[in-house]
Each structure stands twice: as C-alpha cells, then as structure tokens.
Amino acid sequence: QVRVVESGGGLVQPGGSLRLSCAASGTIFKIYTMYWYRQAAGKQRELVANINNSGSTNVADSVKGRFTISGANAKNTVTVYLQMNSLKFEDTAVYYCKREDYGGSYWGQGTQVTVSS
Image (cartoon, rainbow, N blue to C red; front, side, top):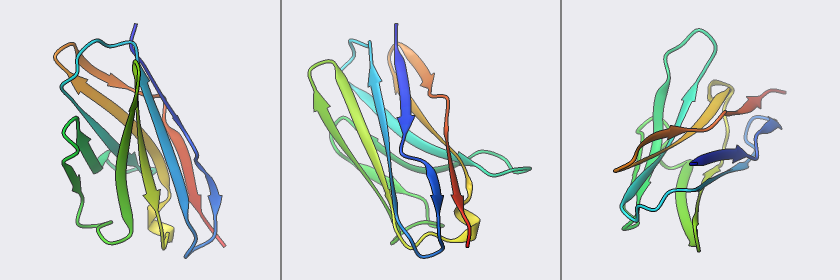
C-alpha cells in the first residue's frame, strides 16, 4: 500500500521560512515524479514544484527564487522537501504532495501553511 505523508506546515510571519517534507513509501517503481501543490481557500489547486527520480526539478514562476524542491532516497522511501523562504501572505494554503509512477497517482493528506503577522 502506497503512503504519502506530508509534514512541516505551520504558522509563520511574512518573510519567514518553512521546510515541508513528504515521505512516499510502499511502491516498487523507481521511475517517478513527486509534486508539491497548494490550494488556498476558495481557489483551485496549483502546482508549486516537482522533482523526478533523476533529480530534475521544476518550480512555478510564482515562487521561483523563494521556494526550492529537493529529494532523497532511503531504501523503500522517497522523501522530498520544499524549502520555502521569504514567505508572503499569499503563500497561505494547504500544501499537498503527490507521487506519480507506473502504479498510479498518490496524494497525501496535506499540511497547512499560514503566513500571518
């Protein structure tokens, strides 16, 4: 059974930083892409960043220069990180992690990030 679990969200002041983590386990496929999405209240879910098994990354223009995605493999678990710096009010959202591989798409439950003074 594939599990995708996010962590690291919380309350932060504008200009602050947070690092989100996403651990994906339970899949046998070594070719994959991991995504970070976010969904603010009343808005559609949007792609923030992604990374594949080769380490290639993509970051949305709206967060480029502030957010960085990275990953690490350990035995049967892939962990990806979203380092978020210079946070703004508009970064407030639920952040979701998704893994895609030949077995399908797997979402985590999301982690809340709130940027507030």
